[in-house]
Amino acid sequence: MPSVPATPEHIDRAAALLRNGAVVAFPTETVYGLGANALNATAVARVFEIKARPSFDPLIVHVFDERMLLRVVAGVPEVARTLMARFWPGPLTLVLRKHEDVPGIVTSGLRTVGVRMPAHPVARALLERAGVPLAAPSANPFGYLSPTRAEHVERMLGDRVDLILDGGPTPLGVESTIVMLEPRPTLLRSGALATEEIEAAIGPLARELNDATEPLAPGRLETHYAPATPIRLLGADAPHAERRGAGLLAFDRAIEGYDAVRVLSPSGDLREAAAHLFEYLHELDALELSRIDAQPVPLEGIGVAIADRLRRASHR
Ligand code: TXA
Ligand code: MG
Figure: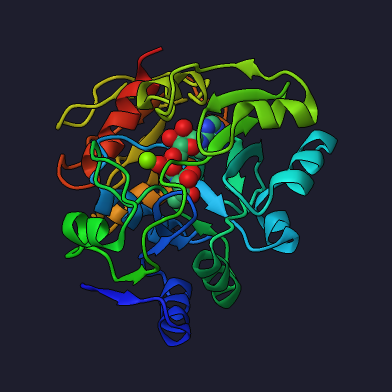
């Protein structure tokens, strides 16, 4: 799909596509994002599929206004209010407690969500027309540089996205600064908004990462959310261990004898499986089972990321 100029007509078309679960690349003031409706788990799974990430990473959710913000976060602490009043719209991402409606695939199972209100007129128009919050990582394949022009997206992902809105080169060219608010204000990623400016507004930030512009390394996710229940990865054969008291996270078909079973995708569709993964892990984890057996998933496409997440969850 070649890019199209971000005219009002094309923005309308992109908004309609997004409401229907499509993935659209669009400019923000920092870099181009690869957007999907943040409240549609299957659409978000496609974002990971298109990026070909070997693992899941929490995505930044873009909102148009405060009303949209309140659909994705559970609350806004005072210090976040101060930062929003001062720096939004703009290149600052705030990590807040997530609203229960935000699917686990957006936050890779975390109970927090990264949110920002972009300043770019095309991003703003698109959010307004779409009427839904947009989960959007930078629009580059895994391991590549973030795109600052529509041509970059076209070259890297052009055959995989549904539409690319060309809004010219992005004015800032580096990603947003990320600040976590609770338990105390902490810098997670330095970025387009200078740390000094943030500290001038709310005082000193703790540092979780002083590593210039790199996002949280995927490996760090292990420290965020892992189920409390032990997870055991099954081989290709059915397990011989006691199934009573245990749960099964199945890929495409249930196995008899477990106390609780969740089937990621009865039709064997990896995208659907990814969309369900974190919700089902949370659900099984809440049942106080002795362990969760996880069936293998095919190691192709987004299945690689699912397998990676299950492997991490099983290593504790
Ligand atoms: O400027 C930007 O932020 C661009 C544009 C498109 O908005 N987006 C971007 O997204 O850089 P991405 O996916 O490349 O980086 C997202 C990073 C994650 O790797 C993670 O470090 C952090 O945001 N993040 C998101 N949600 C988080 C959460 N709940 N807790 C901690 N870190 C989070
Ligand atoms: Mg990125």
